View 1 (tube, rainbow, N blue to C red):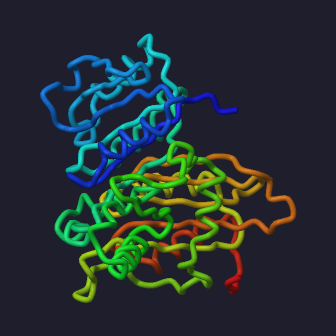
View 2 (view 1 turned 30 degrees about the vertical axis):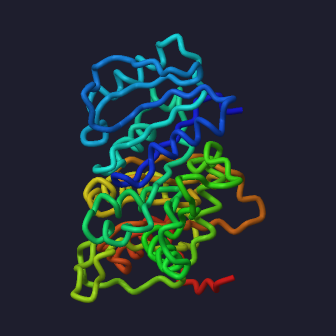
Length: 346
C-alpha cells in the first residue's frame, strides 16, 4: 500500500472559485488532517514561516507565488512541512490564478526526495462558466491550466443557460479530451470524492490513454518537413491546443526512446504540455506507463502483457504539433522494422 501523502493541486483563473472549493473540501472531509499551501500573492513571502490555521485539522503555509519560478524556497517550504510536528495526511495546494501551474506539478514528478514523501493525486481546474470562453481567448495561462488538469469543474453553472453549458463542455473537450468534467454551483460537486482521484497512478493513466479516440492508425509516409511542430495557418482558432494519439505496433528500444523523449520534451517544452502513454519495451514482459508534464517525465512499470500483443500508444497534448513527422519519429524508435499495419477502431 502506498503510504505517501496525496497531493491535490487546485488551479483556475482569478475569481473562478478556487478558495471556495478548498473550503468545501475541508468541510466535506473532517476526518482529514490537511496541510495547505496558499499559493497566492500576499504579504507573507515564501520564507515568511508557517501559519497555523484556527482549526485543529488544518496546517496552513502562506508562501507567495511558487509557480512563477520554482526555486529553493519551495523545497524549503516542503521541508518545513515535513519537519513540523503536525501529522497531516493530505496536502492541498491552491495555485495563483495568474500563472501556469506546470512548475508545481513538475516538482512532484521530478524530485526524488519529494516523491519519497508525496504522490500527486489530482490537478483540479476551476472554470467560471460566465467568462470562460473570453478567458481562454485572452489569457494563455487559462488554456494551460485547462490542458494540465485531470479534473475540470465548470463552476457557476447557475449563471448560464443549459445550451451554452453544452457548448462550453465541447470547448473543454477540444482542449483536454482526457479530463473529467464536472459542473458545480459555488464550487460544490455532488457525490464525488475529489480527494481520491488517483489521476497520476499507472492504472488511471493506462485507462485514460486507452480511452483516447483521436488516433493515427496507419503509419504515414516520411515527409520532407524537419520540424516536429507544424506551422500555424490562418484557419487555426485561438484555442490552438490540440491532442493527437498514436498506436505503434511493436516495441520501442528503451534506450533510444528515453534519449529521444528527453530531448523532444526539452526542446519543445513551450509547446508540448502533457503526454500520456502505454509502452512496450523490447525484452520486457511488462507494460510501461508513461506520463510527462512539459519537460519532466516518469515511466512506471505496469502489468504483464500476458496474452496481449504488445504495442505502444502515446497521446500528446500541445500546440502546433506536426502530426506526421512526430508519428514518423516514433516509428524510428522501434527495436526493429514493423510492417505497416492497419489497426481498425474497435
